[in-house]
Length: 207
Picture (tube, rainbow, N blue to C red):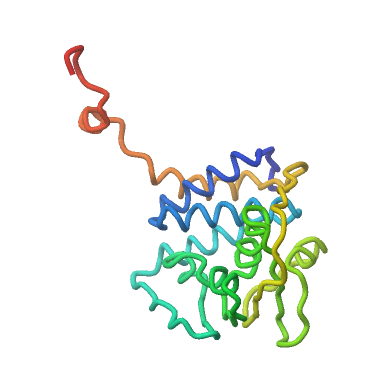
């Protein structure tokens, strides 16, 4: 039986950020993933399983995917998002319609929604090639998000920054939170004399 927890928005963000960094995800990309997770939480979507699945895939991958070629149709999976940053979001923000064959739809939508909170930019999403819907509408309807496959993304409007409403957040189970914590713990170093000295703690009063 799984037991729910009570995790604050700050705990969510910091722990996901640490988990990404602990898995060797670039710091800037880790921050984007953490922001995407907060955007999902604000709309009642729990980002923990997509994050865990994506970090697990990333951790087991030894080769770096190729950088996108810059055309207006871009194939980009979740591992490439972690290696190179949310390039789909940046290109869509630049006015391109981006086609994504992506492994983690929740994280893609979270990245798009986070831009509303940080830059006031709204995105539209399409999974059939013709029916465009606002990202916020998809995330707000409470339905399960798609698991994978091709989707399209484009900007729809720019305006005022919309703060995320961080009350009554979804909560993780203890088991899943413990899995996330194992990734976050990888940023820790052993508490030995060498590491304390390197950190400037000093071993004597004269250090």
